[in-house]
Length: 439
Image (cartoon, rainbow, N blue to C red; front, side, top):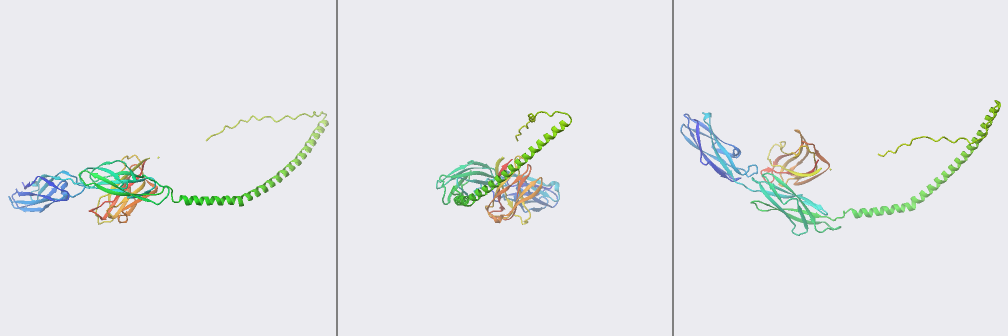
């Protein structure tokens, strides 16, 4: 047998962001001098180290190694009981390597952030906002939301007043603000309000927003009406002073010309009728002379038969919207010195048979991170860049498309981030809110 290992504590308790440790006693059970490598396996292996990492022991000799655990204060490592193992690897007798198992009880911590998006809206009768709540803790939390206007000049309507968030997720709650008093004309009025977010086992959060109430009548309406009235008066004056006399004169001349043409046509028709009558009389006389020449008696004058009615047949107469949606994709990208390498955060429509139409975007960089943000279209593994913007260029940025983005069934939206300098933490945390419809 190569080695034996014994943990000083099989069950450890740790706080996120703090260090805890235990010792491992290793004994060389072989007959030769051996080197043993110590390694922590399991989920804690990413944030645990053994000091020293290797020990050299004589046959029958024992040594002690300290294993230090430093669980990060992050939503990626959830609270609860986490099993681990300490593996002691013998270089002389690999088959004699051992693994000593233990557990780490990671305590829970609560970290909830909230903000009103957008922070300011200008409107006349109503303003629509979204309350974005992020759970950055390591356990699920339930939050309650309420809105308050200190001056009691607004009425609020929350889409819902409670939300349940898993670790590392966000919820978006629509908020509509309506001023209690409205005005047709006047200077804009600013209404500041507060949204309170109360989470379990955490201090209440307060975030603020502003509605800038505008007059109900557009500013351009009165000048446009005045200009239209002036134009109408000018057209009326032009009609009575210039156009109407000119039209009457032209109509009179046209009527006289047409009258002369009618008189001439009637005279021509009368002359033609007289000639035709003479020709008819001459033809009749010639016919009678011809009949007499062959010994026939010409017929007496009679009424010519009328035209035969036509048997024509008349021709018959011939007669000849999606479900609104919105969602948010948040990133938590590690620092990367390679500006051309991006961490990707995809979003797939829950119903793969639907088409997603995006009309509005809100880009957020609340901590002032530095790097590059891209929005990609993933069509069966083929990715194309739809939008690229530097993180340092914005904190809140709205995009409203005249030509909407359409994502066919099966296509994905991918948020890609290259993080160079986080503004308020160890990672870049931009996010994008999407609005549109599902067809």
